[in-house]
Amino acid sequence: QLGVRVLLSPMTTAHLTVLYGGGPDEPFCSLLEVDGLRILLDCGWDERFDTALLEPLKEVAPTVDAVLLSFPDLAHLGALPYARSKLGLHCEVFCSLPVWRMGRVFIEDAVMSLREFGFDLFTVRDIHDAFAMVQPLKYSQEKQFPLKKDGVVTATPYAAGHMIGGTFWCIQRETEMLLYAVDFNHRREQHLNRFTLELDVFSRPTVLITDAYSMAEIHKKRKLLDDALFTSIRRTLSRGGDVLMPVDAAGRVLELLMCLNRFWRNSGLVGEYPIVFLSNTSHLAIEFAKQQVEWMSEGCRNALNTNQRPFDFTRQEVVVINHPKQLESIHVPKLIMATDAVMSGGYSLHVFDRLCNDPNSLVIVTQRGPEGSASYQLSQLPTPPTIKIKVRKMVAMTSEEIQNAQLRAVEELKNAKADPEAGKDQNDADEKDEPDGDANDEKLEAEDTNHQLGKAAGSAMKTEDSSAGPVRKKRRKTKRLKTKFPMFRDYGVEKEFDDYGEIINPEDFAVATPSGSAPYSNPANANGSGGDGANLRGAARGRTASVPYPNQNASLPNPSSAAGSNLISLSFIHVFMI
Image 1 (cartoon, rainbow, N blue to C red):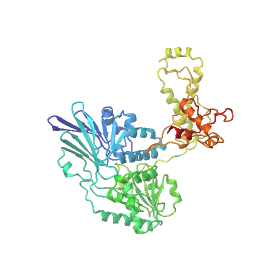
Image 2 (cartoon, rainbow, N blue to C red):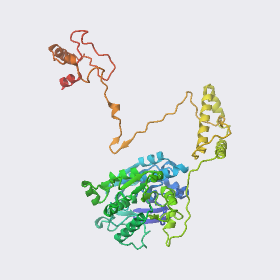
Image 3 (cartoon, rainbow, N blue to C red):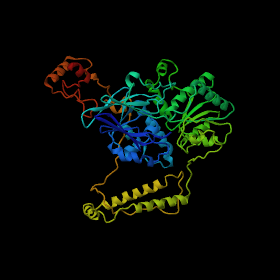
Image 4 (cartoon, one colour):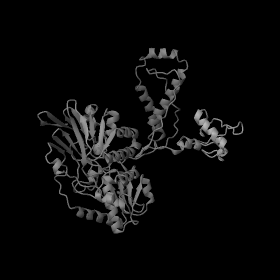
């Protein structure tokens, strides 16, 4: 950890602690303390999901008052679900609306890529719970945090470029100003405006927190880089090879899609060589991009009034798929944009493993990854002749392996037992009032054992029957709460929401009508006779008339049973009351 203390004024002190990261191609996470207010600046992780990296965050997570997120990728918010579900981070989180939406796309894509290989640090449910406590903000929208003593700290987001919704934060305490600006891009792009520091607002900040990873690099002109990129792609496709571009899930891939689509249209390649976007959440990323044009550049906003709307791709322009097996149906040379960007374990690594046998193929690295990853090795100059990669594949377990896994699961359950004498007196007292509780408990224990055995053998693609019979576990004697009545599992129905609120089923609110008659009508009173009108007026004055609602099961009065007892239609009552 690296700590820096700054005296902003005689009465104001700020302390910045870099919890982890701080190096090239490392995630971001820092703790800023301003007069007792503890603000977490980003909560990033990398594609390896190493829990040892989060040890500094574990110590301070329960004491954090607010979290400010700057970008939607894993390097800035990848640890948010784990920190909330395992480390006790339960404070409010603030970011821009695109970061809130695209951040979920990033994390879900990473989890879905690793889930089949036993990833269990957090679930998709944990992701939804973590992003449920996020409060999206607009650019220049202030958020005030009250201090324990007098005064407030104000945090304001501003556009930083680089990714849609990218933010740099202005944190103010009275007249002192702190700027947190990392990973910003000062170049104007196809779908984003550039990062700017307005002189009248940010002319003299008290503290500037930033990075300088690319300071020593010499950047060439954008036109020269684009020409070299497009020439290499077209040459490879023309000789029958495939092109692989490892990309992220919903960040820089949007800029690449717009640039490549423009080149395809200008060069007449549409319909000849397809552009394939391969990701677990590819459809979701494209749909979210269509809905957030107001956060993009002025050119994208003006294109809404034309036929070429941003990210409104046709099937001939961009093929959006969710699994590598779908590539087998495309038999022509193609440009494959697959996640993840550093080729650490996503679909891009599997495609790269397949293309290594084709001398005509081309791999274009779009992002430097952590040391040891495939993208890191390929980005070295000069390019090494051979690299080492680790490819995970699902293989079928043998019958002996399944049996050994089941036995190991039983041993783990036995070793995890608590002291059998603990809570014995309480169990005996409860059993007096529960003569039938043993049978229920034994059934629950058998279900729990079967669940654990299934989890142990869950990595097998095809399970074979072993010679050993089913393993049953004896009833536990540990202390636990018992009930006097049978309990049944309750699976709550989760509500779904969109941009307009809760999604409802219109059929649930349909009004049923009595069989044999039209709704809200009465043929008996269609002639408008005077007697009916008199009965209607009398019923209205005395408030004694009983008018059944068509949706109820109450019996309707018989018009012929008595004089003046004709059924009154609801439409007449509405007119009369008005």
